[in-house]
Image 1 (cartoon, rainbow, N blue to C red):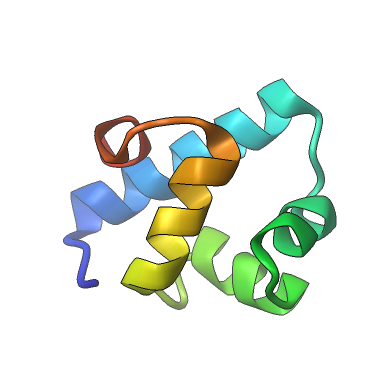
Image 2 (image 1 turned 60 degrees about the horizontal axis):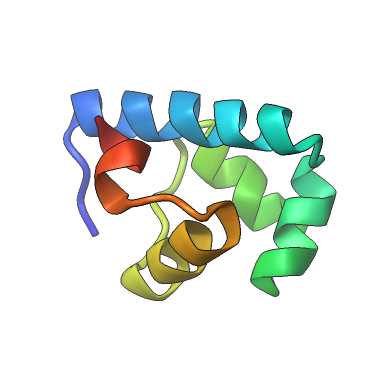
Length: 71
């Protein structure tokens, strides 16, 4: 999935806010998603974008909508 810069910045900000609200570390989040913590780190540093498979998992784990992630 190719985010434009605005959506990528919003994604990073919003995921970090959701993690903070839930009290989850990046490590815990990666375990919930079933991926390596370095992958989550790459997403949240803007070095890589999550694929559709992980977008679906992120939405389910954070109990949010796609719009809440990128807007």
